[in-house]
Amino acid sequence: MPKKYDIIIIGAGISGLLTALVLCKEKKNVLVIEKSDYLGGNCRTYEIDGYHIDTGPHAITSITSGPLKILMDNYFSVLPKFAPIGSYYARWQNELQEIPLTLMQLSFFSILSKRDRILMAGTMIDAVANSSLHKNILEKSVYDYIKNYNFSAKSIKFTDAICYFLSGKSMKETPAWRMLGGSGFVDETNQNDRSVKKHLQKIIKFAKHNYSSQGYPLGGIQNITSSVLNSIPKNRISFNKNEKALKFIIKRNKITGVQTDKETYYGNAIVYSGFVKDLPKLTDKFSAKYKANLKKIKQTKSVTLWLGLKNKIPELFYSGSEVHFDTNTPYWAIPVSNFDSDLAPKNKQLIGFTTVLKEDSFEKQLSKLKHSIFTALPNIKKNIDFEHTQFTIPEKASITTGVKFPSPKSPIKNLYLVGTDTDMRSMGITRASYSVLEVLRFMKEDGMV
Ligand SMILES: Cc1cc2nc3c(=O)[nH]c(=O)nc-3n(C[C@H](O)[C@H](O)[C@H](O)COP(=O)(O)OP(=O)(O)OC[C@H]3O[C@@H](n4cnc5c(N)ncnc54)[C@H](O)[C@@H]3O)c2cc1C
Image (cartoon, rainbow, N blue to C red; front, side):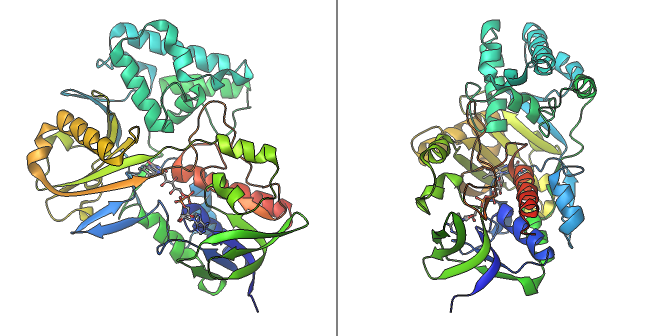
């Protein structure tokens, strides 16, 4: 007799696990089905040769007041500890300068020319001010905003690198609101609020702004996943690893179960946390319009190189991370062992370098990334003790112009969707947390919880 659960969750990445935690604490019996042999998805740390490697470099946003904070306050029994994220730097040749967060800082950001800094400030004020008056103005791409100003090649490279960092896409595909939202100038939580107060808040952010709400989890990104796992009541949860969900069981537009490569399970509701793009592979019940929208979703592939260094190098003596934009392969790097020295063997340093996969082959992109790293930080080459590479899809959907993410409430009754392709606010784990709160809201509305 197949077992019946209150809720079945497909996928044990951070979205699936946070959903499992919330629902178990809401007294539901939950089954989590995960196709890999590990839990955590992209939110994982593993050890090789004494180095503790995260699945990609991570900075966690909005930890003092965002959706993860709400989940931590209400559902976590064990809390992860965060180190302050420090500063975000831009590296160009031998120069390292803090990425400007305010107009004042922009005026001193001498890596770019004075002319371009003044024009950039004007463009940003224009965009933010106009967004308060005209609804969809920030849907335009960053490129559309700046193309007529004749910026220098260096400023274009800088802007493009920041877009890749914030959305995983070039400035031609990144909407202006993502750029301004990611830098904290536009509040992504409620873009429709055009009140005078909100308008003034945006303007104030041009004068006063910092990254004090961001952190790096001590012990590595796994610490967030472990805190979730240790908070889940054991009597309510079952984990089936190495099992892939293949087909939904749907009767009269209502989901009743799921068939995997091993078994069939029944539940009152199913929460799917795999790629929403893959949903049509699990059923043919979606409308052509729904499927066409899913097809439009774009993803970004990333290449990460982790380097362990025999000695700590002075170029990386800082607390924070850096965006290098001098070469044609911009990258984002975090010397994570500066936050937590236990991530590397004694007196050694661990740094994660990540870039977007633009080439057709992983090897080609990796060699371009290495070229960029050794150009920016020539001291590194002779100090390498350890190398490890990763190929990942950081978010299930990149925020690009003209793309709509599906709602967490699917068109099929009792089938909910969670993850970084169901909510457009913020990024990464913060975005995953928003989506979990949305699913909870819909489930409450539907009387499931
Ligand atoms: C290089 C890199 C840098 C990043 N930087 C940051 C950062 O700075 N800040 C930040 O907040 N986030 C960052 N992230 C993003 C963050 O790690 C992810 O957004 C988050 O972990 C995604 O969680 P998820 O649960 O939505 O998806 P995933 O982690 O992809 O989990 C989905 C899970 O579902 C499983 N699954 C899928 N289909 C099925 C099926 N049919 N049956 C069973 N199981 C299935 C998968 O195996 C997987 O375990 C970064 C990620 C990378 C890779």
